[in-house]
Amino acid sequence: MAITNAEIARMFRTYADMLEIKGANPFKVRAYRNAARTIENIAKPLEELVKEGYDLTRLPGIGADLSQYIKEIVTTGRFSKLEEIKEQIPPALVELLSIEGLGPKRIKILYEELGIESMEDLRRAAQNGKIQGLPGFGPTLVQKILKGIRLAKKAGHRFKWSEAKEYVEDLLAYMRQIPLTHLEVAGSFRRKKETVGDLDILATAKDFSEVIRHFVKYPKIKEVVSAGSTRSTVILNNDLQVDLRSVEDESYGSALHYFTGSKAHNIEVRKLAMELGLKVNEYGVFRGEERIAGRTEEEVYQAVGLCYIEPELRENRGEIEACREGRLPDLITLADMRGDLHTHSTFSDGKNSIEEMARAAMELGYSYIAITDHSKRLSVARGVDEKKILQELEQIDMINEKVEIEILKGIEVDILEDGSLDMDESLLRRLDLVVGAVHSKFNLPKKQQTDRIVKALQSGYLHILAHPTGRIIGQREPMDLDMERILSQAREHGVAMEVNAQPERLDLDDVTIKLAKEMGVKMAINSDAHNIFSLRYMEYGINQARRGWCEAKDVINTLDLQDLLRFLRKDR
Image (cartoon, rainbow, N blue to C red; front, side):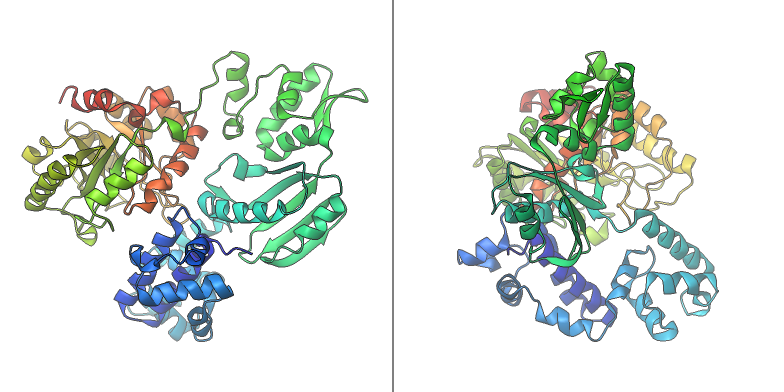
C-alpha cells in the first residue's frame, strides 16, 4: 500500500523534534524540518518518484542521506533512525513542543528534573507549583504554559484538512480496487473545515459484505473497532478514526446530505420539510410511508423547496435564506485564480530563486506572481534591507525579460509595534505591491494591537494585510483585535485582507471572511509560498474562501494583470 508524503513528512518532523529534545546539532534538526516541509508540499507522491528513479537530491533541502532515508521509508514503510531514537526518548514528549514558550531545551529540563513525559504530567506540575522552581521557569511562563495546554485540549486530536486529504486519497484509492457504485467522504472533510476530527465514508455496492471485508484489510489500520453488516469503524495508524457506512442506492443522496452536515444546517432543512408535511432523514424524504426523494442531494433539496447548496456553505449562517431569495454566491474556484501575491525567494527565507518561483507559477497557469520577501526586521527570515531590496528589484527586471509571466516587485514589510512600516518610504513607493504583516508582540492589549494595524492601513503604502490575526491553528491563538474596525479601515484605504493559504494558518477564518465580504472589503488568497511546491497551498485558501462565501469578484488576484495593476495603483 502506498505511503503518503504526509506520513513521510510526519516521520521526519517527529525525528527532528526528538533530536531537538536530545540537544542535537541545530543544523541537523533544521535539515529534517526543511525536508519535511518540502515533502508535504510536493504534488506528486515520493513513492512514484522513487519508482521512476528520480534523483531526490534535486528537491530543495534533500541531500544524499535524506534521499536514502526516503527510499528506505517508501520501500519498507519504516524509518530505522526514528525507531532508534524512540527507544531513548518518550514519544509523548514531542507533543509538548506545541505549547508556546516550551522549546526543546526547556522540555529536556522538565523531563530530566521532574520526569514529565506527557501533557497531563505538565498540567499537574504547573498547577502544583513544581515548574516555577526550575531555572528559567518564572510565573509568567507557567501561566503561558497553562494557557497553551488549554488551547491544545480545545483543539483536541484533529488533523489539518490538508493532512487528512492525503490519507483520504490513499484510502479511497485502496477501496476502489473492488466494485463500488458510490464512494464519498462526508462530514467536516467534505465541508472543507480547516481541521478534521474523523472521517465518515459512504459507499454503495452490490455486495457490501465484500466492501467491509476489503475495508478492514487496509494495511494502515491500527485497530478494527467494529465490522458489522452495514457499518465498520477503524482507527488508522495515525489515530484517525474512519467510519464506513453502507447505503442503498435510492437513499444515497439523503445519506450524503445527512452525514455531510452540519447538524445546524440539517435541522433547518428538517424544519422546512415538516412545514410541508414531509420527513427528512438519512434514508430519504418521506410523505407518510412513501419515499418521494433521496437518490441524490439535489432531490432532497428540491423536495423541500430549495436549490442545491454547496457543502462548504452548510453551516446555518444564512445559506437557506439566501437560497430561497436567489442570492447564493457563485463560489470561487481554483480555476479563477490569475496569480499569487505573497511568495518568497532565496533573497530572504525562501528555498527557490525568483526565476524558479516564476516558472513554477507559469506551470500552474498564472499570469503573474509577486515576490514579497521579508523586510529586515524579521532577522530569523533573513529579511532584506534597503540595499538588498534594490538588488532584488534589478534581478526581477532581468528575469521579466525572459519569462512569460509578470513578476511583480513586492515586499512583506513588518508592521512594527507602533504601527510604522519596516522599510524606507521612498523604496516602498518603487514597489508594485506592499504586503504588511505582524510578526511580533502578538499579546498586546486589544486597543493597542488594533491601533497598530489601523495605523499601518492608514499609511497609504499597504496593498494587502497578510495573515491578519496571526493565528497558527492549535498553537497560537488569534491576536485580540477589533476586527470590524480593521475591516472598515481596510475598505476605506483600499487594502485587501489576505486569506493566507498555509494549512497551519488559514487566516482569515471563514466567519471573518464572510464579514469582510459583507462589508465590501476586497480579499487576496495567497500561498505565502517559501518554495515552488508550496505554491500549491492555494487550494487550501480557496477552501477557506468558499466557506466564507467568497466569489471571484471578491478576490483581487482573480483580476487580469492590467485590472490588478489599476487596483494596486489607485490613489497611490
